[in-house]
Image (cartoon, rainbow, N blue to C red; front, side, top):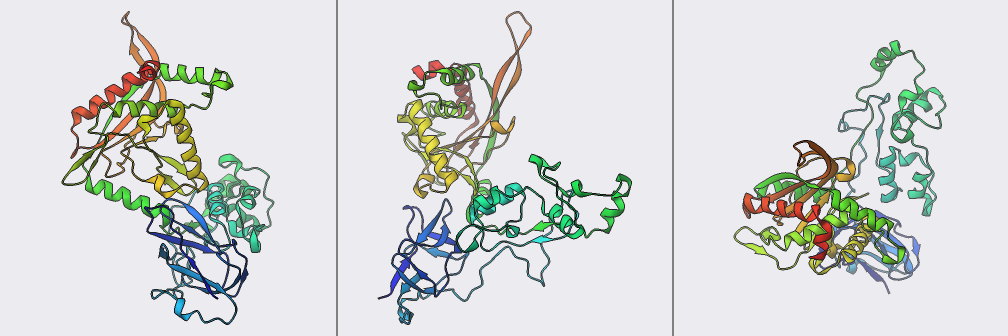
Length: 448
């Protein structure tokens, strides 16, 4: 008897999933538990497994299809079984999936080419390349379609990309066309070999060589879908539908730097060695929100909802894009508990195993770009939240001392964006003032 494979429900907030890629074809024999396809929600990626052993009799939706949860996406059974009654009414198996490939009659979207690009090859999206491998390949500026895959059926997986040499597509194409040897290390970022490393002409002749090349050179089309599409839509909607205003200040960072140093040097049994500066900022934010309920709120058009508890979202940079997991009931946690929960959620986001429900329900968000050297920025509200705190880097700031001179004191930049339709500038400024006090005397904040 034929067995349906349903699009599984991943969390209560997920209504549909996008099929990224099928690992099997119709007619393939599969075992129970074997991965059939990879799908993603707007928050996470996971595999759909075969629910029975047998032959794949039907695949109802192609890659890139957005399918409602609990709908049949495939059928497994015995060869020759009639599955016509099991096909969904909206089956779209005849549709061609949207890919990043450039059709012959179409011109690719032109992007500005890097100075070191000396070829005009358009990279096609790669079938048989896992999403993790694609992400790593993009970071290393590699074309994964040129690699030998060691995954199932020759699929290129993450370890194949990790082992590959970092060579720009332009350099690889130039080396192949001219029979040049690719050096072990180049002049690009992280030792990446760029086309300029292969140039065999004198500097004064570079202009002539460049003029002979097809302009603008390498370009890649990247479909806006999945997490990127969701983030883009939410950011645009946030800017269009809220009255956003950003206030900037800085806080004396000597106390938090000192506390972090104590944690690092504490005995292992104390269990505080992993507490980071970001954990400290999250904790101070939670304590401050307890004093300013107008910022721990949602703006819902005709009403404002202020929350008694703090459900703190924090931005995480992942291979799939920006994610904002939520530390629920953060106001009830100690610093050690908050630190552990933040690390657990962040790792789940990075590994793609995050529960979609853990990415919703936030009442306030913190986004930290300090590690990247950002001194000030304008965070975009995670609507309907009323506020989002941007954390910047720590740098010396001239402060007048009691003798009338100046001392250079490390300060952390803080950028608060809030919805002026829901909160006024004065309470937002007082929020930042309170944050400055709590960070400047953090051990007193812990005692409070």
